Image (cartoon, rainbow, N blue to C red; front, top):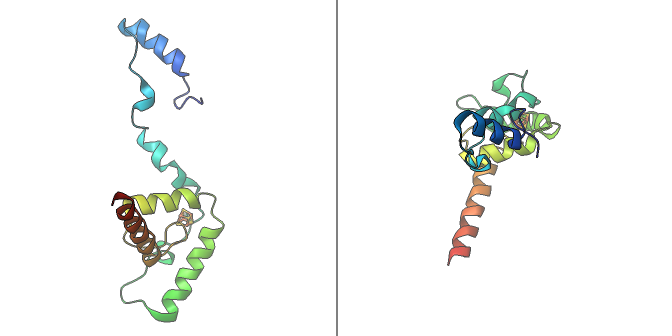
Length: 123
Ligand code: SF4
């Protein structure tokens, strides 16, 4: 396993035992550091691009909106973290913008399908 903090788990356990006189709790079940959850955003292909490219202004619709969305999706298609971005947007149900190459409506459709599937499995 790759140490997340530069200290191997066995070394950390030995260090804690030496410092506090007792073995450390199982750390693999602890939540990951917050920075690890967001680090992927630093690698996004949209980092240097204007946010207006990914979020629609009030009242935008029709061809203008489709063109903007397609341009944003083209950026996403070449993004090295598209999967992480998409999973994030779906998990927190981002309400606005292009995330992971998906529009708001496309994310809603996926979430609706997942809801229907989970209801079907439950019954
Ligand atoms: S997938 Fe798209 S929105 Fe997400 S980080 Fe990459 S370029 Fe940005």
